Length: 149
Ligand code: IDP
Ligand code: MG
Image (cartoon, helix red, strand yellow):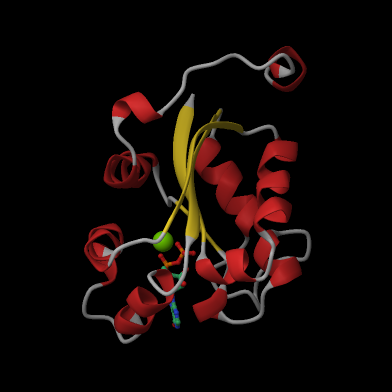
């Protein structure tokens, strides 16, 4: 089982797309094991996006992600990192495939609705920024035998 950190970003929350986006991950079969609604602080945003420090879009990215509340989640499942990235679509929404969240619901890279970890290691690092161990819930879902072989 893998875990991935998902952020339903401020543009998605402001546009009333929170439910639509969570619905897509749930329908895919990924299991929610943690979730919080929060205004991401500058300090947390800097830690989360540390790899992008110094890039041209970095300041705009920090302003965007701290501008308004987000919904932060941990999803679990086999190949959860890659499965979630596919459901999210490519970074640039105008390149993202129809059927993906970005391909269906977004147009610009700086307003691309969702974050998903890009590797298992990134996921572990990012989850630790947003969640304490006791905020993640181990549970079995009644539908698991119909989703997981
Ligand atoms: P990802 O979210 O698909 O993993 P990254 O390359 O890790 O994409 O970039 C992190 C976030 O930074 C993007 O989701 C997007 O919000 C923002 N970003 C990346 N490149 C640009 C850009 O060229 N212009 C504006 N924002 C960007
Ligand atoms: Mg990334």
